[in-house]
Amino acid sequence: MSLFMDVHQGMHGITEEQLSAAHRADLAIEAEEGVHFERAWADPASGTVYCLSEAPSAEAVQRIHERAGHPATEIHPVPVSV
Image 1 (tube, rainbow, N blue to C red):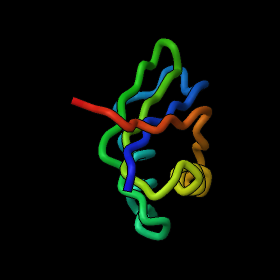
Image 2 (cartoon, one colour):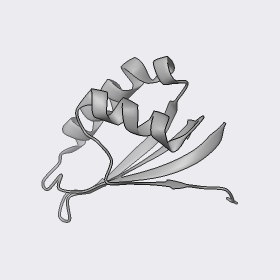
Image 3 (cartoon, rainbow, N blue to C red):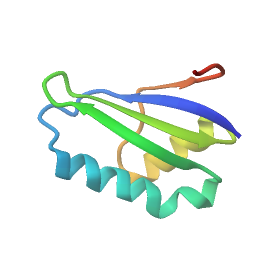
């Protein structure tokens, strides 16, 4: 399993409740792709949302996000962290 940071654009004005609901939608189906979404962050002013996940591939992350209704704009592997 690898870590991934994905980015969503265009979520202007997202609230904490909406971010939580989107995260819960991912969590509800994540096991079907062997993904675990660790955490999500949002900047409502820019409309940018970030999600950290552990997954077998970036494609698995995107499939979950697509099924949950919020596909990622970018997905980056995170091979090194401290």
